Image (cartoon, rainbow, N blue to C red; front, side, top):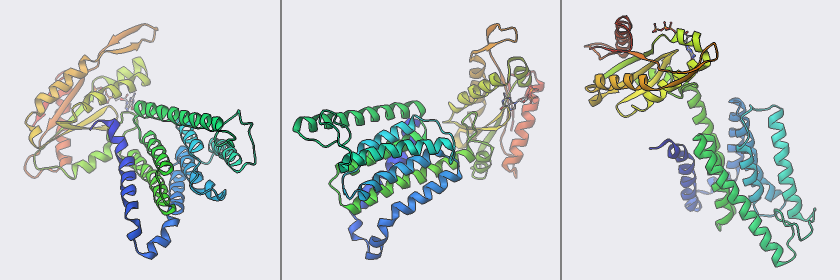
Amino acid sequence: MPQHLRVLLSPFFILLLFVIGSVYVSTLPEIWLAVLPWAPYFLSITALFMAWHFNKGRVFVAVLIVMAALWVPSYLKQDHNLPLVPTVLALTWLSLMRERGCLNRFTFNRIFLFAVLFAWWGALQTGWVKLPTTVPLMGGEALDGRTEFIESVLSLGLIGLSITLLLALWWRRVDHFSACILGTVVGIILINVLPITRLHETILFSALLFLWVWQLLLESRHMAYRDELTGLPSRRALNDAMAALPSNYAIAMVDVDHFKQFNDTYGHDMGDVVLQMVAKTLERYRGPAQAFRYGGEEFTLVFRGKHVEGAPDQLNWVREEIEEVPIDVTTARGQEKVINVTVSIGWAVPEAGDDPSQVIKRADEALYKAKKKGRNCVVGRA
Ligand SMILES: Nc1nc2c(ncn2[C@@H]2O[C@H](COP(=O)(O)OP(=O)(O)OP(=O)(O)O)[C@@H](O)[C@H]2O)c(=O)[nH]1
């Protein structure tokens, strides 16, 4: 499944699950129905605590925005009149901001900014502030049909623009945060347009808050199991994968040739670009083999089951493909040129009684032989 759809899967699946659940909510025992109104508060405290723990200021603020959407109307005693426009605007605005950690001046500034936005909406709703009828904005008292019409068009325009922007951000970033913001905005719109009771509304708000708890769980998993530079699964993920291998498998170790020299000549940043390029090429072989960053300039490919047979050919293709990628570099004298890097590969399959760590050791020995042979080659050790 394409990565774009994969990141959207969990937010929209959670939403769908809660929407279906809300249909059957009235069949729940009394005790559950009594507890349900507390669910959003419990979930928001959990999400806020987790966001603080993982130092995710944007998630912290997103949860507060969802809570404001739930809480502000009941505070104003205006049930079922959700602050739709300020909520969507605040979430969109937030997704344009960079992650800058939690509980610092950036987070407090953002909370203040969005609090002003909600306070403005509340003031207009309650009539504390009255705009001239020619300035229709976010619930300003509509004195005639024309003003009401302009106000609706303006609200729809702002929401449409926000959704377009959020879709563009999701498409560009392909990350869980953008997907969760999209899910939250869709959820808020659903709550606003569906003819639902207060109880259903509570369940849908719980869905939106659960979505953020889930996002933080995914994020923590991502931090533990993904290599930050290349985006590949990390050594820890490889250890887990090795514990669940079938009987027929092969492990290949891929190492960039003369990488120290490359770093010394073109700089560490260019070295990082090379590692990202190698990772991207290895990722393309996701079908037959799973790629991991083993550490430093070393990568691991794991072939399982029927793919083991084709491993030598696949490894040669990988090697050739990496060799063909042109890399633009600047020399110490400021000259620009295009170069190519190569990799050496050693691979092995298990012998009777071998555990995966022994197979990795033998693949490493094969890699050593490939280096000795002159590099840019594949050596297999069955
Ligand atoms: N840019 C960059 N360099 C790294 C990273 N991790 C490790 N390195 C560098 O990778 C280099 C590893 O070099 P060696 O293992 O000695 O490899 P080599 O001797 O140059 O090349 P071979 O003999 O062909 O393996 C060291 O200079 C490390 O600093 C990283 O994440 N980014």
